[in-house]
Every structure is written in structure tokens, then in C-alpha cells.
Length: 270
Image (cartoon, rainbow, N blue to C red; front, side, top):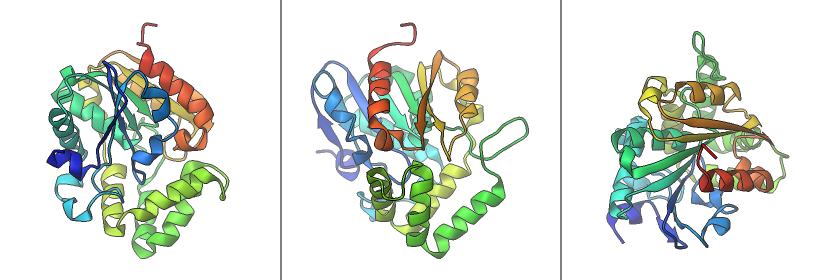
């Protein structure tokens, strides 16, 4: 196993001519894809991994400077593809990882057949003529809550993000992976994500993108999916699901898994 594979807890599952990379979002790890993976392994080579900073990774490897911008994570994706000798992949990115994949594809579009974006946003802050869902004051309060009592913040944030019942398995699962993160790393990652603005890069993304969005999502207003569709440089398609929450692959797998499989298996013109 190579250095990158080991650091990111990479698992390569199944077999097939087409490689599917599954990339998780903030506060989770590769386990967030547990409902999707069994449906892919019969006819795809599936790669799951943990983003640096996830609770399952070695916190000593987390370089605060490198990961102060999403470019650091995009370099990780390219290094991972190189180490696994992947020359073409379908990239499925949840939340921030959808944009990380998009950034990586600007540098090496040849490596990406298409990008499937689940709950993606290029900017979380509201701006003139742009609705991202948050004001700076909202984010300042969020960061302060993380700073002052991380465990309490996790307990409050998880049900809001998942959009489910307090006692649901999905909320418990997200609480677990969120709480596994080292608090100072979690705060740094959250600040990098929520303060990022990638709108200027969208026009440079030429790989076909499939934008999949929950109808109701605390982190990403549904209008953002249409914004991505308008601004991305290549072909794109949008599908809004009747799901509630930012982690529908955990909370509503019966709805989300068939949608993801459809977009993985079929191209935009179909």
C-alpha cells in the first residue's frame, strides 16, 4: 500500500472497467457511503477513502496550512488517482468534496469522466445577487459554539444537518463521525469550507456534472443547485430529490441510492 493510500485509509472494492471514486463531506468518513457501495461492486471498481482531518485519519498528518484552502484536498485527490493508477473515473462527491473534485478536474480534466455532486455549494455565505443560506454572523456563532464546547455543538448540529429525528440512526451515525474529529481540526475544516468562495472557478470546470440536491437542506438552499447548473463550464444536469437534510445518503438511502446509481450509469444526454 502506498503512502497516500495508507494516510487516507483507502479501500478498493469490486471490479469492473469503470472506476468510481466516492468522496465524503465534512464531519463524516467513508462509512457514509455504506448504503451505496453494495450496489456498485458487482460492475465497478469502487474506491472509498477518508479526507484528511476525518476522525479516522491520523491527526498528526493534518497540515493546517495545506488544508486552509480546498486546493490542498484537490491535490490529495490527484495524488490518490496517481498512486492507484486511475486514468479515468466517475467522481461522486458529497458536499464540499463535490467542489474538491471539481477543482481537481480543472487541473486534470482527462482523469474525470463525470462528476456527481450531492449537496454541493460553491459558497455558503449570502452575497449580492447570490443566496448561499448564511450570513457572516451565523457562521461566527457556529464557529464560536464549536470552539467553546465541541461535544455539545456536535449534539446540536447533527440533527439539524441530517434533518431527521433526534434518535434516528442517521443522526446517531453523523454524531459519531463528527465527534470522532479532533475539535481544533474540525473547527479549522469548518472555517475553510464555510468561508470558501469558488464561484469564480465554476466556468473552468468542463467535465460533465450531475447535480443532485435535497429539496430541504440546512447547509445548501435548493436554489444553489440551479446556480451551479448555470455557471459550470461544461454540460450539467440537475435533479432535486424530495429528501430532507444534508446527508440524504444516510437518512433516505431508499430514495438516494437509485438516483445516484442512475447518474453513475447514464450520461447526461440519456
